Length: 406
Ligand code: F3S
Image (tube, rainbow, N blue to C red; front, side, top):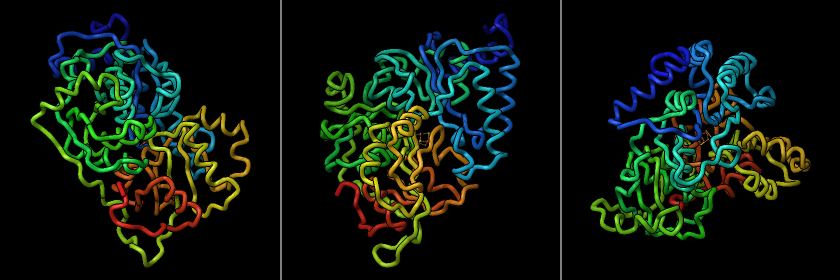
């Protein structure tokens, strides 16, 4: 491949793999069984990204293993109703054409392991998108580095990655012990914990003790890992009594010199100008589904709002098959039309600055972290039940400081 015998596209892909392997002192390359490729939204990759993908396609290469795509910049079917422009749609379509031409599966979701791409424990994969990386490493027990979009794509086109980093068992042991001394119960609590740990953990491997295993549902672990990967670069964590192989790591964790105690989960979670009590703060959009919600998660939301008026737009971001199944089942029939199932995308990777959306509420620590930095958006981070209150009233409900963990 490196010599160009499989064509120029594959040669470029292998050059990327070999360059990274050399940078990280990998002794060899190893085969991967699947890839998850980020860098799909035209908003993020622009013309330079499209040119790169089209040059690979002209180079005649194809995926050699299952490779799924991360969310793109819009809902491929309902983009106009959601407020995306024709120009953006046409540009996004060129990106998706280029990827599918290379053989990638346009799943456009960050929870591919709930769809058609779920590796077995111990399998080597090459995934990008921090929340998917965190989940596949920590909860499923497969092995990947935190790839970037181009390197995950290069692995998809060659079938290989460098054998370094989290592909080596020696690098998967805890590097710090995080003692959680406060109750962590709600969806928001788990996100707040992830944001807190990410800030000090960097690229480390935290071992968490003190969490109630019964509270550690897959959805909450997704939320925590996504937040950790947003405020830090954590690609793997262990939770006592919960994650695969945790018992193997407990002694190492207890002998760690680096110990962090979590005694407080309160985070700055209101936008500038939102009042504490007093003046009502209007909400344009409530965004739930980061990482993408599963069907069960959506159904529990629909149960709460069925037959009730909703005054702010409510987006539920989901994988395309979840949207298709819910619509076919009639689950949206008695639901206010302001509630929309949004497939293929999310508020973070879409061109949010071009939408008429300014005051946002979310139950996702990761979405909160990234939306805070968008010029046109003010964002509040609240637990799911309070997000639904905001959707129903069109205003932020009364807020109390330090709510997370309360
Ligand atoms: Fe997924 Fe978008 Fe959140 S890609 S993890 S829904 S930022």
